Amino acid sequence: MKSVIVVGAGIWGTSLALRLAKSGWRVTLVEQYQPGHLRQASAGETRLLRASHGTDDWYARLARRARELWRDLGERVGEELYAETGMLWFARRAQGWERASASVLERLDIPHELWDPARAAALFPDFRGDDLEFVLWEPQAGVVRARRATQVTARLALAAGVTLVRGRAEPYGAGAREAAEPYGTGVLEPYNVVYPRGTESYGMAFQGWAEPRGRSRGPAVRVGEEVLRADRVVWACGAWLPRLFPGVADLQVTKQDTAHFAVAPGWDTPAWVDYDGSVYGHGDLDGLGMKVTSDAEGEPYDPETGDRRISPSSEEASRAYLRRRFPGLAQAPVLFSQVCQYTLTPDGEWVIAQPEDGVWLLGGDSGHGFKHAPALAEYVAEILDGAREPEPRFGLHPRVPVRGLRTSGRTDRADR
Image (tube, rainbow, N blue to C red; front, side, top):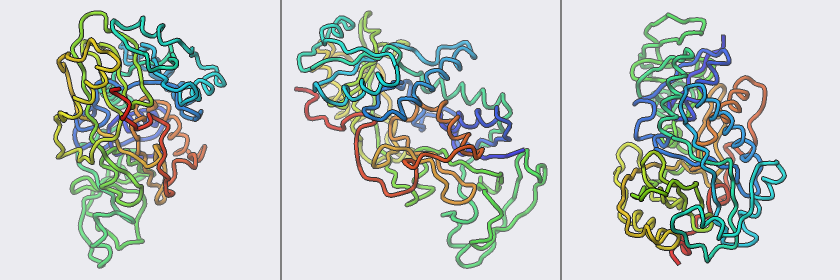
């Protein structure tokens, strides 16, 4: 039986662990905290699910599959993890990103409509759309209850036979950053070696020694004083990936503040995105209030030591947009706020790559990865099974900075 160690119990890691366990793999899931812990990007209360991705149809197809799987997962556990609220894209240009998205949706036969702004206004108690050319309506888009979905997926993975190991993981063996100096000098260090269930040596625990570089015995992970081994290791550890594999992938972690505003009854509206204004949100879901949040990349951020309070400038940016689009809410109090993070690649494409035999990196969500998780897990499972190769776009090649998979990144027009 094939074995795998998945490092990181965010939504990508838990989804992959669940998929592989259901496919017959022996799976060990390593997490230093708890699945759904507040330092994870996956711990945000909500994430949007949409098929529109500009001219790109690969992500549109994946999002459609993810929608199907989120609905199935919710039915399986008897809980609405995905709320299909519909989504409005506020188009400021007649031939901009939204028009390109509509063309892809048309080609893929994904439900959508182009609306006059006045029609969209009828869905909100208060709305100003005089700067809009049209509105792209996605009726089968919506909102995933993100943190809850992560916790549920982790629970299902454990029920499927996944072994959860609590501890801080580090690369071990050839290419391991932490072991670079001992390997380089030929010093051998003792470690406890534990083989997970499903490997030939399962049940054996003995004192091992770190070999000099180039004499690795296969994929391995160091967790405290133990070394776990398996046929494959997948590092799906989000914002911790760049510190564990510095220079392997050009990843930047940024602080992303989210704000929800107190609203009166009637604001249970569809989700919405202003691509050119780089702002997104949704109506009052589960009593959390109206979410209005900038998608522009924030300042560099450490997920363990960074301040978990949103900055005054972030609240003001959200209020500026409220004044522009929903003026009746401009003075609404903040009901709930949360700091998340993006782990960004320069071009917004993910990292799905094998830097050495049997070791895979799965990261660089770039702010648009959560919604795809169950479908991405299917895709990565096929890669680990040898049934397919990852798309070239996900490799470790130099990336050219480009926008287009989330929003424009511009904010200069948001409060005009």
